[in-house]
Image (cartoon, rainbow over all chains, first blue to last red):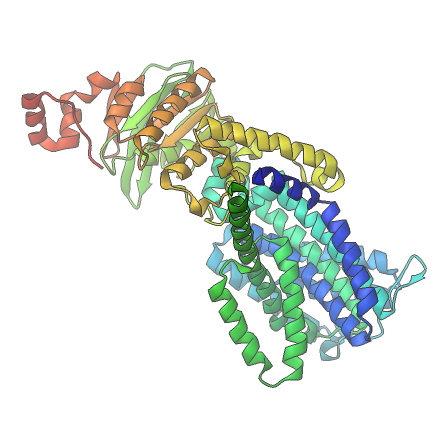
Length: 331
Length: 274
């Protein structure tokens, strides 16, 4: 009986209803309760980092490829979109598409390494790609402005609609996040998603099941890259200015931590962790001097208590709740 | 060995080297479609290596492997799976936090109707497909004698025996034409062993040829149509189980020269040790 109840709960909580409801509630809450432009800026950042982290979750959480290149891939998306809008006066939507494609190509390039190189060396390759891109952004001054970065990115307009107010930008970021989340959940539930997951969990077992692990790793890298590229393009619209420091290794580690703390492979956990960690890193770290210390210790404590991240905690709670229900019913 | 047109698996002159040592040395074998074929032999005799050679998990130094008449020597493991080779592992070690349904989904991969685009654009159809897949998983769990409540359990919470049965269920979902089972009875209790016996028999009637690596001699004698005895990477004997197992060279390989004498004197069945 509990099982049937759980089943119907699961059906209601399913795609696409859960995502539509979540989107509506989030937008409503932000619109009603978040007023200051600095808070709205924080909401934008949360949504965009969540989006980039969802991409990394496909690469790391599902395919098992430990990459620190996700911030670099996001940077490429941001710079591509920004430069296309500034120098070629392209509309945002076109710039967004090109940015997504460019990031996909860079991420695919990184993914190619994963086909040949075992996991320990793969992270070094991603580190090298991240460093190379950052040097490129600094040294190609004519194009990227070097350390000064690129300014004067035109404010967000989609189809003649001015969306450059903080609230509108936040809503655009949230809508994009929920679309990305929905698509990522659909991937996880699909044949390809199970194949990617299998390749990450146990490559031998995956191959024995007829799964082309190499091809799916590559596909996961490309898909994860698109997420970062889209997040980067929206990031450009959020700041209207981009510098190489916006996508430092620190940002790469933040995205990595979001996935790890969220619970590898869990999209909901990733989004929740993004909200928490972006809030902490932007609020706590900026406002207090002991912030970084508390932040670092906090993360260590979380990883010790909950090695499977927020998703692991949620699962444990669900199981405990199920047992309590079961006992009630038994009585 | 005479060529057999019905061979499900044909191994010819297969040689596998591990750092210069021959783990398999020029093995010739035919597995006939529809028979229960069992590989036996002491530890380190190359049984698992032979399974790996057939399923594409070790490179061959020499020789060839054919599946249903097609040379697959140059094919990679997943391509061989596509051509009908299924296999289980001695100790399946997929992620502990993955659930039973995840592992079964890996197995269903080749026949999984849930495409990504379908999941994105047709969520209601996806819901229906999910129910179908769920039903399929419950059926296959039933086939291997596991309760369907296990479906949403984490793999880490299963017993060793349950885990092995789930891995068999995983392999069955790929609808293999040849199923390689690597020491399926190790770590199983008697009830599970009986169930396994039933599963292997069922495979044959379902048109799948089972090939087992097995230590449990009693299990083998009851079940196998033919057995092959491997010793130090070479094929020592091949044939009907009881007769083959009591051949002198086989007993000697297992128990040493003294064991052979004891076997003669005692006249009891050769017991293998892990």
